[in-house]
Image (tube, rainbow, N blue to C red):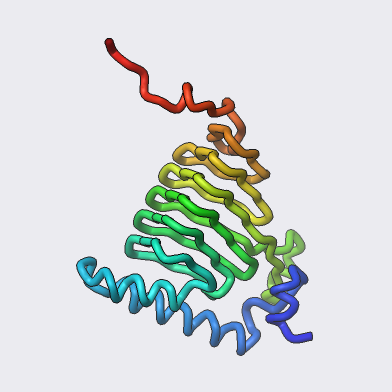
Amino acid sequence: MNEKEKMLKGMLYDANYDKSLIEERTKCKSLCYEYNNLHPSETDKRKTLVKEILGKTKEDLLIEQPFVCDYGYNIEVGENFYANHNLVILDPAVVSFGDNVFIGPNCSFYTPIHPMDYETRNKGLEYAKPIKVGNNVWFGGNVTVLPGVTIGDNTVIGAGSVVTKDIPSNVLAFGNPCKVVRTLTSEKCLPESNS
């Protein structure tokens, strides 16, 4: 089994020294560099190139520049996907987003896990766990989502949160570590009236 196969199966693999994985990351980062240097008004070119970077997309998506990822092919986005500036996705494992996902600026999604044992870590070995985001999810700015997390449908993650564990559907959650604050209902989601 080669290192990429180990990576995709969530096994310990050589992230730092395997030539084929280094080549794949270099290719992806080159495409990200090209994407990030397109003029913002070149919307058609941006959309075409980001679809080339990502593994699976639907039609309507926009990722503001700059955007960085490791491989790209492990990222799946649904319809009506929007990410603000400085999105970082480290994707040795799959990172999937449902439909109608909105991501604030400076958000990060990390799937790699480095071993606690320094001798193993110093050999460049790591493993990765997938991240799954449901439909209709909104992330405030500066949110970090850690490996292995699943976030349910219709959920809001507040700005500055560090999401270390699964978050269910239909809730508002925030904090470090991110915790459920309350259930969201249609009445609670509407702005309060001053009349």
